[in-house]
Image (cartoon, rainbow, N blue to C red; front, side):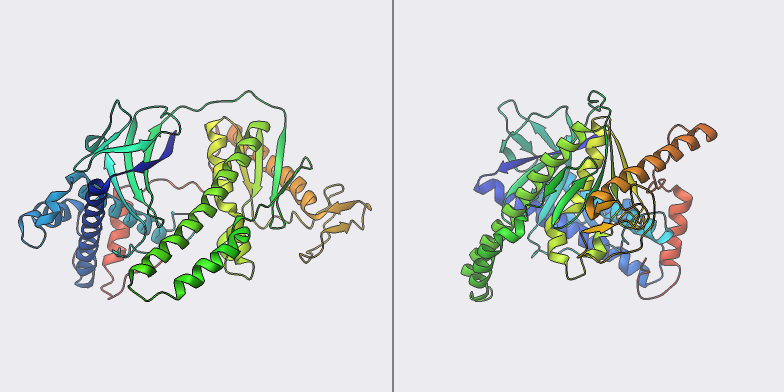
Length: 418
């Protein structure tokens, strides 16, 4: 399985200048190639291939006076920027065909030099690990890096990222084997919430740290200071950096806490079941700040990949499963309840239920039922493994060509949106 390992980088002044140049060149190649494809679409011309874009907008552009500075950075950075654009178009075409699950994906957009987050991607022929612990980046030099933990294997790619707080990170992609933990006899269902971050079916309750709420007082003061600075001034840039650093601290604390909680749950249970929440929709309600502060999506993603890494089972139940309406003792469905009702009495059996605890137990039962049904299906169809609900096969050439023709063949002035 492929895992990503992130480390903090500390480039010196000349290396920061070289990285800034690489960020800018990668952004220009992205925008030039995207403009070429959009112009071709507007003119009713065929889809411009990657080989043609690489030859015209990278190789030949370096010989022109207006783009001669593209030769100052590694050619791998420019080629990978074009590859990233191709990946964005493949995701867009997959959304048009309905093969891509999850949120809708629109057409690729232009990048701005004012974006506070910049990145470049390199393959193995453009970077190497030095014996002294530094990382060599082509046309940049040996960059100092803080190794918080060793890499389990040789990396296949490197992404250098500069975040909004001005920090530099090295993100390595590594191919590793699964580390199966000893089997346990426990399974757990998880009900995620806001007042209590998570309630487990075994009765465990995990309180919500509310990292953003705790930092709001300081953030308010910093944002008020930012609003008083003149637009375009150096003082405004400094104030913006202070706000960004404070937000970065909040995000780092939340991520660290998510890692600790998810690892503990995966280590203690052989199977973990959660509800497939519509976080994107909840983020547009009056509870948006609390929903984003909880970070449910990141937490569930950690549970999923750690389950695969450590040989555990991870399951999602449908978001329309009435876990809060069914009595976990007798199965009676009592109907929907407003959020202020935290305990309720079952009219059929008289059991008193905690709302979140009952939902967690029903999540466990529904997850077990889905897993059992999937296992029976595998036995009947002689399939290797049950196909995940969000699985989408990679499109072949015929499907890709059909999607491209549908995107370009209409002759309209605007791109087709999913």
